Length: 205
Picture 1 (cartoon, one colour):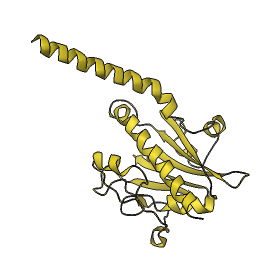
Picture 2 (cartoon, helix red, strand yellow; picture 1 turned 45 degrees about the horizontal axis):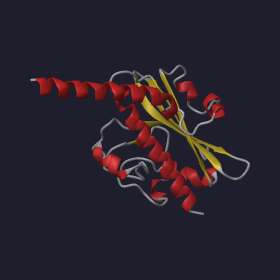
Picture 3 (cartoon, helix red, strand yellow; picture 1 turned 90 degrees about the vertical axis):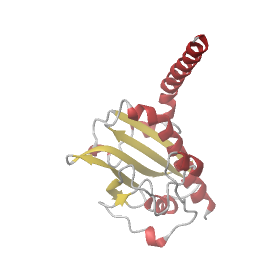
Picture 4 (cartoon, one colour; picture 1 turned 135 degrees about the vertical axis):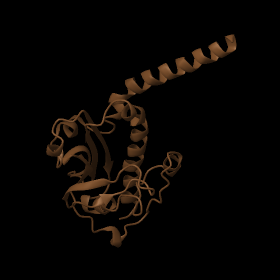
């Protein structure tokens, strides 16, 4: 019995320490790579969820033009280009994807209203494309009762040196409970996505 209680105590301590670590690292995760100016900027799609319960900005510099990066964004999704993230992680969460290493012309006709599937099995629910600004932004999200409640905003900001800042902004009303639990996993996946696009766009002149 003593051994059982000791093991239970150790497990409880691990859980508490994990929760504390996640809470302390969340501010860093929620602005990974993004500058103050980018966090404070107004981008396409912001008006669709004007007062989000959670506001996340992540960014990477890419040595390529917006025109070179944009096609990789257009073909995002299961059954197309994938999510360019960590294939091992994708498989662990039950979402095995094939991540494209080239631009496919047959996937370059994305339109407002199209669905973008995250997993081959249709779970979680597909994102719906809300706005497209060619070579500048793609905004997709989820609606409830006709209102946008969750947004993924892919923003391309050209720089004077010829590079581009790729910003991934999330505005969502989905917080607490389950959403807090998966928050670190979402960060891992999105970081992999941004770095995956960076690697691909920089590899092709």
